[in-house]
Image (tube, rainbow, N blue to C red; front, side):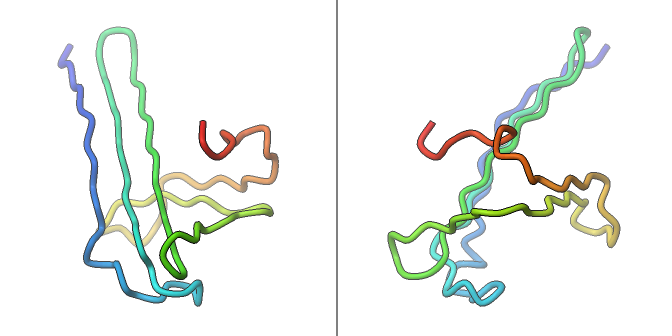
Length: 94
């Protein structure tokens, strides 16, 4: 059984300054991906920070949203979830 174990941080600096979805200029966009595959199974954790608007303001999602994950070169997602229950989310700052 191959064992895969990584913890990667990607900072999307090429997107900083763009106005995505009319939220104001993007100040920060980082994603951390932690994955491990071994004989016990597969664990994948991904965490993103998106800061839009003037410096210091955070993007607040205060209603249901659609999460879609796709490979960079694929037009179709391989995972989609409608998040409408705040019990699925970790409170800010934890």
